[in-house]
Image: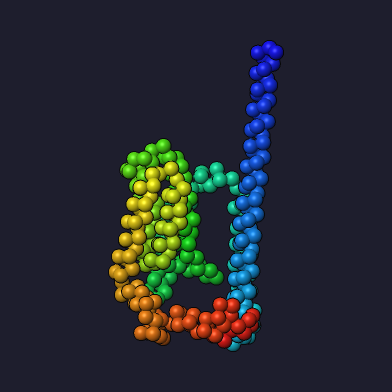
Length: 274
């Protein structure tokens, strides 16, 4: 067999192996997507069913429509499904290109809400646009993950250096956390930080850097939790709900009543009493 012929056979073999690898990857991706869709659908069905059961009496009393709250939830499900469909059509490469514009735009909204946002119960988190009042911090959950992932991937060969690791964390996570805490909203800040930690854990950064930043973030969250009176009251209400049964302990006590009345499986659909 000539050298040229052997080279052609090798090339064909390599092409076939590459095609099989791509096919296997597509199959694995399809299986993962199917699993996620099944889990999501199950959560939606359970959530909508529970919402209908728990809110039907309230809907009749306040809106004269037992399905009022279900209809509102279905609107959200519909909008979410449309968003899922359109965003799933884009390759992750497009998201990589859009990461910085999206982050800058959401950061602008976080600044805007502090200036002109609607204040409710001492918090300024919403921008009043008439029929809707979007909450920019919800968009920040997505923008931080997107921007952090794009930059960490670009810098993956340099993440062994502490400075290169801390810079994007400080800019994207730290900067966003400061703006959200100015609203103030510690709960959303913790959610954003947890999502960012998931990105850090899947990056090429050394584990000691990721663990150190996680420990520092947890310590800071603890300090912030005790830095304001209403946050301390919530912790006290959790530890001793009966000390303020009509205030900070209300929600937890209602869960006691629910478990005491219906046990682990409840009293049945439509049988809710509170």
